[in-house]
Length: 79
Image 1: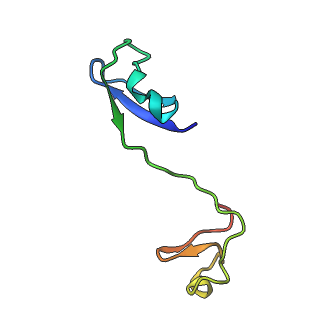
Image 2: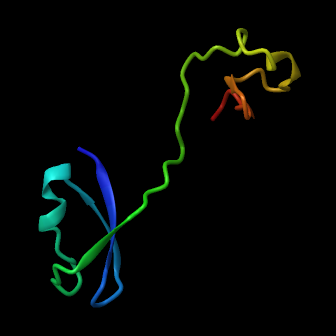
């Protein structure tokens, strides 16, 4: 089940909900109970890559960590 982030229009509280996409319209603020909430854009972070294709990456030889690479650079192996 995905996590969605919201801000309450009434009390301005920020909160998260683990809900199905179909339940977004039923969300209420846990602080004041208002149904007037705004879904915020979530930022994904902390993605871990297992294995990886560091040897296949054209820039792998330039990465000091020899971690998984992409067009924007390489990740350390301990990420």
